Length: 205
Image (cartoon, rainbow, N blue to C red; front, side, top):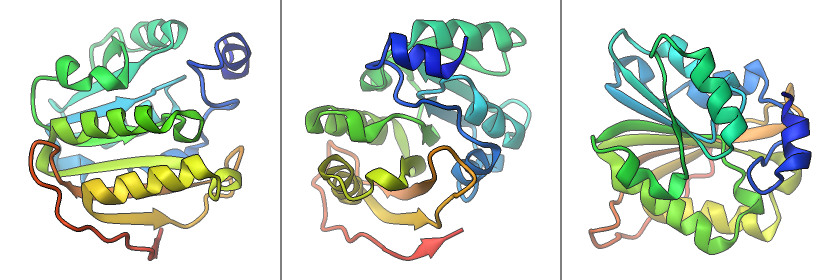
């Protein structure tokens, strides 16, 4: 079952037309200290390209929970990881606090932020910060061609408002389409007053 076919069948559940490249998966999983994590969550696992990159970085015994809304992809991932190295959950990222009961060290997201309504962006980011530990890390990607669209700019602002530090990687050209990675550190949990945040525009690898 190809990701393009699922995009055509379920465009609201499948935000990409091609799997993430190995280069993008590497960028998505670097700089998050995954090797020391106890619990990691992936949102929008799709066909598992980034799932496998995460799994390879984790120490034995680390929990990796993959949350996927598309039922076809969720079942395919569950079949792939019958050895229980990945816990596959068929569900919505908005329900993350009810799906994951333990503090999470890192969240890696492949969700299509630029095709979401603003309120859904906010609900999912609130769910992410609601489960992250005090020193939690978050990464996600965006396509270069959509970087200056209103949804992309709103997402960047919402991300900046919820984390102490936000970085943007260099462009990952070996991906279809080319993309870049947002990495965010130290969440401001939504139950607490949100301090003033600044977006760091420095480029990182």
